[in-house]
Structure formats: C-alpha cells, structure tokens
Image 1 (cartoon, rainbow, N blue to C red):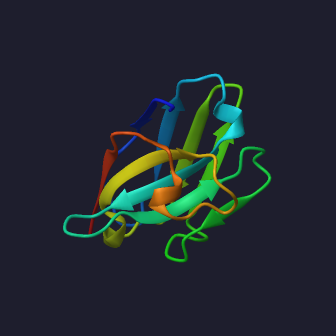
Image 2: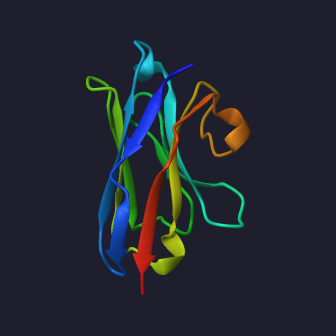
Length: 124
C-alpha cells in the first residue's frame, strides 16, 4: 500500500478557489490511478475526480465537472485538485486515494490506499 497525505484544505467563501495536494510515498506511484473523494457530515463518501497513471485520462463527477481540475506529477509523487467556483455544497472532508484497478475508477471499493483527509469549508 501507499502512504498518502493531503494538504491545502481550509475555509473559503462561495465563488472562491482552493488547491488540494496529495503527497504519496512509494516507488510505484506512477503505476496507480489516483482519485479524489469527499464526505460531508451524515453522507456517504462520494467520488469527485480521477486521473490515470499516464495523465492521459481524467474523469469527473457531474457536480464538479467544469469547476474542478485534477492533475498529477509522477516525478514528484503528487496529485492535485484545483477547485474553482466553490459552492457551499462542496463543503466536506476531501480524501486522496490510489488504485490499480481498471479505468475509470470511481468506486471507493476499487481504491487500495487512502489518506486521512483534509477539511474544505465553503461559506455562503
């Protein structure tokens, strides 16, 4: 398994932006698809975005498509999530995850490793 650590969460007003980062340990980072999920209080963890190991493919949840952008740097073992036009409904704990399953990987069960999460709060 891979060790993952998220950073970059915080409090932002509606319409603002945040950039989340996830640092991964392990020499096989480039062979994993990486994803971002989020979990709001009282709700199940939901898929946000994923990027293939080669960076050629990305896939987004409908609720964030056009506002969020996922990217990765295999040389630095990092994956990022740029979040623009944030809405109060985006408030959640955001998790970074790694998967060696097929593409696209949008279910929590397909991910092998998870970070501890970072809180994002969007005020109205």
